[in-house]
Length: 237
Image (cartoon, rainbow, N blue to C red):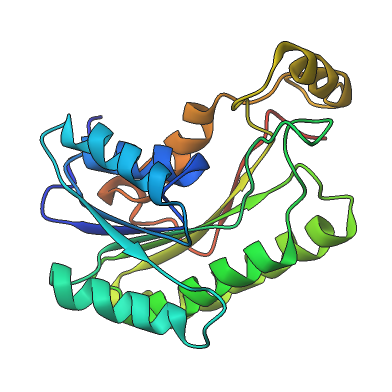
């Protein structure tokens, strides 16, 4: 079933690069008016602008300083003021592939989780009726200290905010993402597969396999799903 998000405004926090950029492109392809925030990723934001322009759409870019107190509230207010409302928010707490990590994906860092939480808390009261707030966290390092503490915290936050926005028929959900096949060399990919033998699907997820459930949760088809954690992890056991 093809979704149509024409007339909806979406904000993808930290969405100029990595998974967020793929989500932004996917939402734009569904007709949404898309805004992304970034902290110094000017070149990546410009590239994403060109990709979305090729769809015949315009990307709205907001540069933020996460070191300044209150940045999340200011971002949400600015998007509301300039775009006329806020229907969909994606708060991404994952970190995608880098060549410096032996498994191709760096651990979830507390700072990244904190930024996503700040955006989610600021956005929840601003969501339009029947709005969508989607948190995205990483399961790759859920046995390590940062990841092990982050995922339960994101799950609790999703359930807490789901209750808070329910009176507006808005939903809040969490996508728990497994490791993604993004920007890996063949050598790094081989190392990653060796570490993924305990999954039902012993392979890295394609980025579109992580984007798809995020896009689904942003659509009207997901109107009865809230406070839930959707695992897109290849059957991590």
